[in-house]
Length: 156
Figure 1 (cartoon, rainbow, N blue to C red):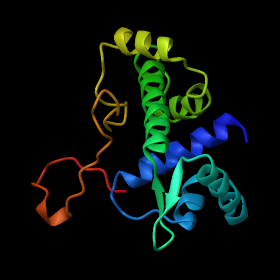
Figure 2 (figure 1 turned 90 degrees about the vertical axis):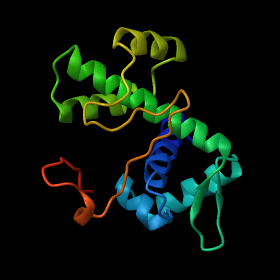
Figure 3 (figure 1 turned 90 degrees about the horizontal axis):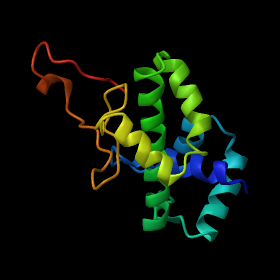
Figure 4 (figure 1 turned 180 degrees about the horizontal axis):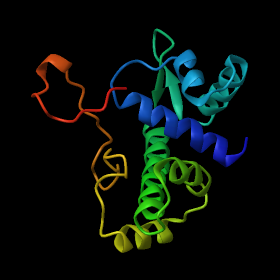
């Protein structure tokens, strides 16, 4: 299986588990826009490689190794988006599309240099936290009736 496929799945699982809701194969397939048979086959491989385990209700759980890879891919993606928007002037949509390709090519050395060049950002262009360096990816989920009037929120 191609490395970029493994990385895409683990990054998706990393993002989907940030809201602490169980991730099942249907939710993962919908997120990735991939057919159920493809998801099932890929999950078998990820399990065999030690990146995931299945819980008692068939929920997908990242192992420490799977979480580490997923976090690294999401971090690279966010840093690339920040570089493309802040320094190269791309819009958010174009930056996201380009980052989807480049995230698989960025080496740890280039990631560190990019992080420094960008002034060690803590958020991506969309305002989401950049994971890594001990900072987990965590979006706050708050009921709308508890959000102060006038405060900006993202509804997902």
